[in-house]
Amino acid sequence: MKVLAGIVMCVFLFFSGTLPAQNAETNARAEGMDSLMTLADKSAVTVGEALEQIVLLAGSEPRDAQAALGFLASKGIVAPDISLKAVLTRGCLASMVMKTRGWGGGIMYSIFGGGRYAWRELVYRNIMPSGGSEHSTVSGGELLAVIGRAAGDVDLKME
Image 1 (tube, rainbow, N blue to C red):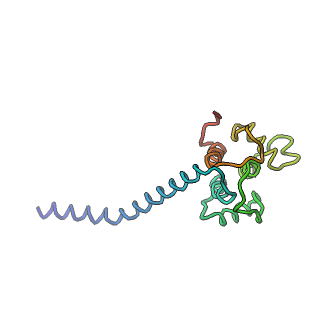
Image 2 (spheres, rainbow, N blue to C red):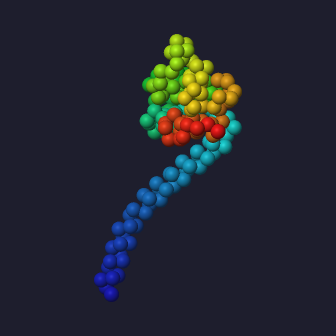
Image 3 (cartoon, rainbow, N blue to C red):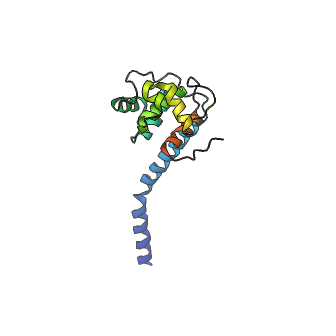
């Protein structure tokens, strides 16, 4: 009986040290999912919210929008003085995705660059929807879909 009690005590002590770490990881994942669900429900997202997702596409971890801006500006993906509170347009998002992925694009994008031709290139690649224009506002769901498609995590069929 003393041996069984000793084994139970050892098992309890062993797992009691790992439970807080597991709970912290589980809580962090739950918070991340909550923030993605909140973002997905937005009818319009800001540039700052988009930068936090684009930085993931660039292979870094976002701490906040300002840190994402610093990282992406250092890579030449965005201008360092871009407004984080501005509403995100399809052209702006397309430019960031094209630069982050290092895609050259078609002849018009190669000559002129810019949001219009970046958006048209991503429409051609089935990464962005064709309705609207490069000036259309990006919703949270659209942002997450574009990031997923550009990363190769989501099927490219548009429906």
